[in-house]
Image (cartoon, rainbow, N blue to C red; front, top):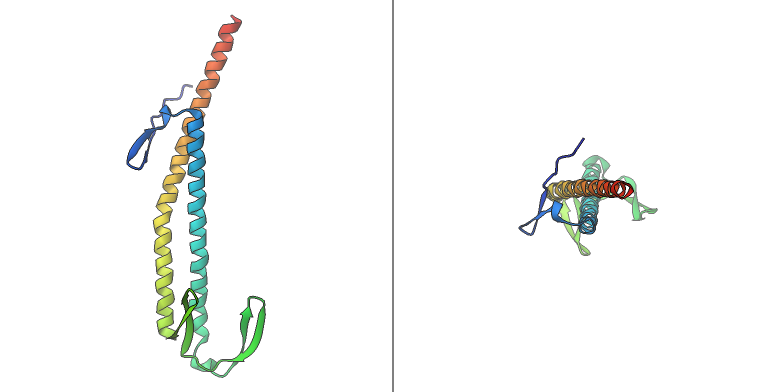
Length: 167
């Protein structure tokens, strides 16, 4: 069953590229580039999700700060695997890491709003990256499809040439 020739154009920097006009090595290079770009975008989304999860956990942990827990004993983390005993004295204020080693004292409600803004910002960034990732993935699939067509054409040419040589 013959396959219809697909004319696929990709747009790079406002220039359309007809994939069917590219050679197999050029298509392979383009495919490699698109794979690297999709890996980078996937990694970026993953990193944003990790940071977002930390903000969600931090926001959720603020629920412990209420009047009923004032004066209670707790474990204070010094590292991820080492804790010291402590007492919860101030349930209305926290120190928030705002980046590059700076901490700001905030009340609990302001801190919840701060974390909400950070979570929303990260969500928007992931939503911006997602379409680009899907576009790159679609481009890669188009390149693979054209490569497969070209490989089939080469194989059929070689088969017809070896058939003509034998005759």
